[in-house]
Image (cartoon, rainbow, N blue to C red; front, side, top):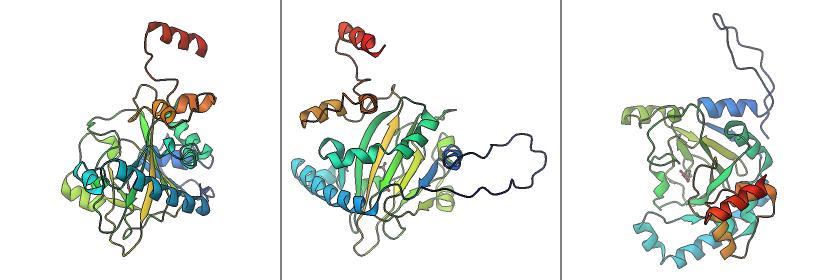
Amino acid sequence: MTNSTMPDPPPAYGVRERVADGDALSLHEEELRRDGLTVLTDVFAVAQMRDVAQRLDRLLEQQTEQCGGEQALQRVRDADLVRCPLAFDDAMLPLACHDAVLGLVQRLLGDNLVLLMQNAVINRPGHEQAQSRWHRDLNYQHWTSSRPLALNFLVCVDRFYVEGGATWALPGSHLHEVFPSSAYVARHERPIEAEPGSVVLMDAMLFHRSGVNRSADHVRRAVNHVVGTPFMGQQIDMPRLLARHGRDHSSDPFLHSYLGYRWNPAADVQTWRHQRAAAH
Ligand SMILES: O=C(O)CCC(=O)C(=O)O
């Protein structure tokens, strides 16, 4: 995990308030608040990433076939994406649940977290990736909040480098309502380069995009997660999808909450009261 040795306080004058230096995650927290992004290195083992890469390729093939083929998915701008992989392969759940990553997320969002989505983005040379258009992960929102509402984190399954389709971001754009001018974007867009096993975290209001993959043959896979607070809805009803595929994580106290079992709308008044009583 990234851990910098603490530098001496920089000389300054007229400064009466400053952020105190803290532990290993404090700098990442500060980067997330100020820039809207940070990178944790060496979170997952490279061997694990190689295994995940193979599993993602299989899942992509399955989902593409189930959805009528690649061209059909391209028409709805959903090609080269694996939707909710953790519902289909148990090796995907640990990517969403790493202690250090969630510890950092909790510093910004508090204890009650909900996984709003998990999607793998496969960025291949010669293939247009729909995610390469600028967007916020809280799409269509043009306002700012005094506190972060949701974060996203990308697990780098393959190496992120510019020619190979690394993610690009506009640092600080989570603090502004509107998307900046083309000139501003051209001057301030920044690539995020990282090794396999790293995790790129962003404020979910930060503008970002996949890069264009201009490499000869580098497939750049990433697994993106959006984590919010319980008043936000999941992209796909995870408890229901998991159940459909024979998986039930509801007895695990953390997953009960994180995967949405606890927060799903109740079917009726009695059920809501029963659930509320059980939680107390
Ligand atoms: O593929 C990337 O580099 C970014 C992915 C992304 O923008 C997203 O999943 O929202």
